[in-house]
Amino acid sequence: MAVAALILGICSIVFDFIFQWLGILLGVVGIIMGAVARSKTPENGMATGGLVCSIIGTILGIVTLVACVACVGGLAALS
Image (cartoon, rainbow, N blue to C red; front, side, top):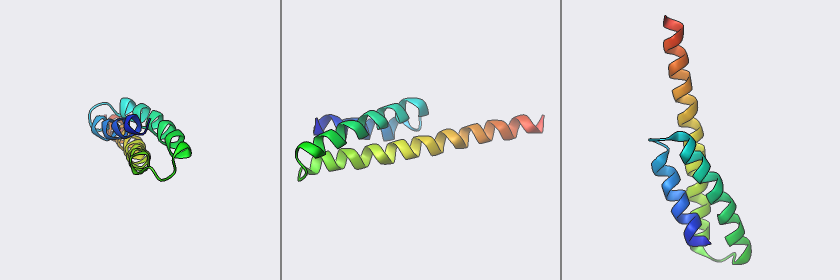
């Protein structure tokens, strides 16, 4: 489960720049899987890495999505 959380966290960071909604979704699933993996074995470094990558990917996806919406709103206000 720790490996899956790490893979989802890395994919979340990558997909944040392509499809923000997919990056956010992968990040949330990675956070859940990382938390479960960490509760089973707290000293597992891969679970911690997956949790951290997923949190970073989710936050980055939300910030990118908000920035894109703000840019589109700003361009619409110019018309």
